Image 1 (tube, helix red, strand yellow):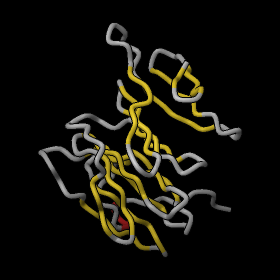
Image 2: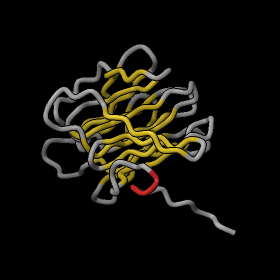
Image 3: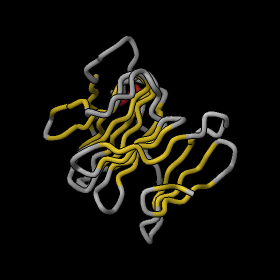
Length: 170
């Protein structure tokens, strides 16, 4: 019995190097690539999308579905997009050419987006800065997760774990 299916350029994927993958609530597999192409694997077929560019870079896509059927896409150099009903919309979160390193949709519907030094949260109305690395440290944000009890955790590249308590991480 086969546990994994390989999807490659031979199957229509535009880029052989994948930076993230997820499955949405309808069973569609979304593939973010290092080259900046978004792949959608549905019903045995691969469709590739290019995001609207604001600058010279749009690469290392991170993909994350939410409970409302939207797909959130973080990029290196081109901000954060949401894909809904066939349309890509750039969010109002201004990151410049910063690399998005993490995207999470939590159980309450909030969207968490992090770069190496800052973490933002979107509550459906506005983006809020939730955590900022102290300037004197090299403690870059590296991972985000939500536990079963709803606690949001951040991991850093120096091995620290930070837990969200209310509106701050400790």
